[in-house]
Length: 315
Ligand SMILES: [Cu+2]
Image (cartoon, rainbow, N blue to C red; front, top):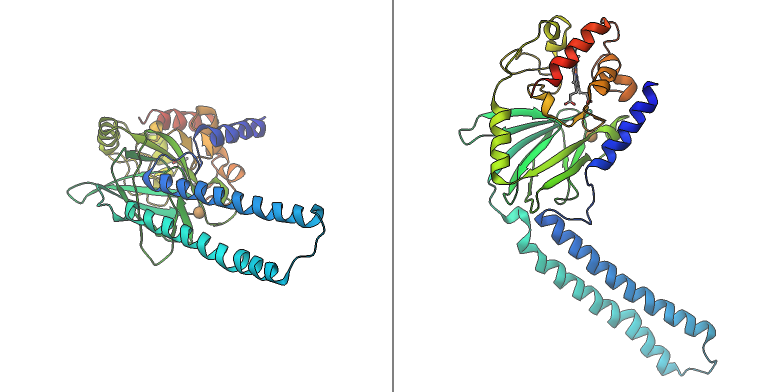
């Protein structure tokens, strides 16, 4: 019974947020989709000409063509046409460069560390301190965000198609990517570089807020948890997970301080419901092969239920 339920949630998780480069909601994505449609239109014109000439060659009246016509045809179609076509494309492509977000000064910095198979997000505050969270990105609309991208295990890639281009996270390197959202909404980000068996379960919702919505999200995220749980500590969860204000030593897994506010479990693998959380706690490996969290099927069911209720309550 668990598997069909999990399957349905997977599908839901896949459809809830838009993941499309053709429905841009960011400055770079807008430019990229403009370029895509421009190239597509050009390709259609070239295809139509080639097809037209092919049909003419096969079905057209058979009359002898002069050598002069053949020379002109080769020079025109083989040299002049590609030169002009590619020049237009080059000029258009270069004209887009000044609009690129990388040229904008950032108004916000988020440190992103990719891990097999989830995302550590840390928001840099004006005083330099950081608010850590995981697996769900929140951004203010119309503000250029700079992402500081690192990885500690293998190469991953950070991609939010609705906002712009992607950038790899490479062990031993720090890469920078700037994106400017232009439309409030919820989008889907993904890991775009194969990183292991659960690569496909390494996604994240991206919520773009208006300025007030973002400020109140950040203020709530910054606050420590309001309650602790004996069971959470006693069951060994605190060895890997931090809940700020309650248990702050676990650094292996995602920060769970406000887990109850996240919309998904396991980096957009499951919708965040009590039922799915219980399935996750019992056997994460079954849901996400290779995930670096052990299963807790050995805990009494009542303990798991109590821990799930506690985590869901961390708003
Ligand atoms: Cu990855």
